Image (cartoon, rainbow over all chains, first blue to last red; front, side, top):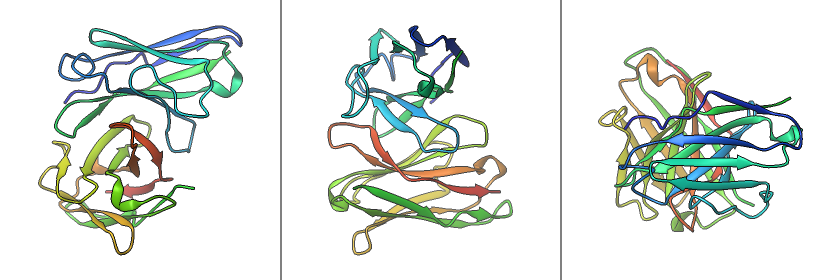
Length: 110
Length: 117
């Protein structure tokens, strides 16, 4: 399984919106609606932010939203805040109890 | 509250072995599948291994298949990862991660333990 493709970095000013893309194949992103997104701050374990492509776990602000079209999933963060600065990883179930992550995107809040 | 605490990391020579443990608490351990996910220094996340809630099935990433073994001890609420024939590319922080009840997602993670080969 090859890693999903994410941009290495994105940036935005406070209050703006940013979108992080995640491109896979029909064997992972395109084949299942089991796409998730994780936020990781330096030195800290990842945190689940989005699951089932679009759903947010309890406690995750509604500024975070997800979508998918064909083999590409996207994470959008609206109303950027300084605390959103982190690395973001997409993840897709890839069948038969296997998962594939993206390479990660570093979000900088300017 | 859910807690996952990894231990067992350290420095090992190429070809050597190491056993990682993850002590779980705050949830019904026997009801949830568990995973190991690793992160090489400065790199992204990589799923490593999965074990079903009942321990009857285990699955591995191709990169570790045949070298790593995931297991669980219900009497101690502990998840383990036996790592043999270690290679330099296995150097990473290893996280144990609990699968969510609502789907194939990792909704709780430990703090990680560093393995250096």
